[in-house]
Amino acid sequence: MHPSLLPKYRGAAPIQWAIANGDTETGVTIMKMDVGLDTGDIITTRRTPIQPEDDSATLHDRLAQLGAELLVQTIPDYVAGKIQPRPQPAAGASYAAKIKKKTAALIGTSRHGRF
Image (cartoon, rainbow, N blue to C red; front, side, top):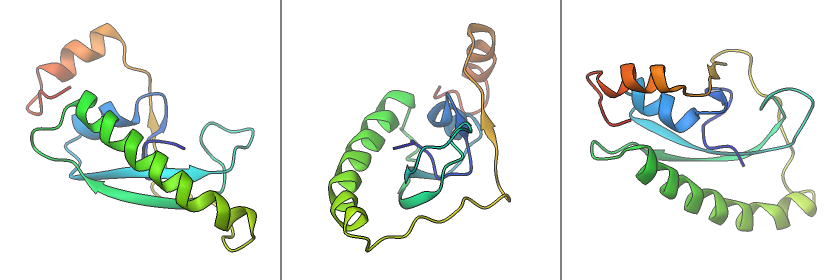
């Protein structure tokens, strides 16, 4: 389970970058693992809005719950062959780099300030 709508925000900090970039929506992706960084085939996704009051902690918790529910719903159908994974599209791929203290300070003072 990855806390973004892949291929957007592959990498270590998808929640923080979605907030910092002012996205209005995010979600979770259930994917197959491969050798790349969050590049595996997509099994399923679920979307959720990013609320004005969300910060990385509240959004993390909501995505964790959403991802857990989606895994429980998805695994039986995937194992039964009812869901076929699909390759991630090349368009829209981005990398969510790990947040460093210097970056956090800059983002924390941005117009979104909910980091």
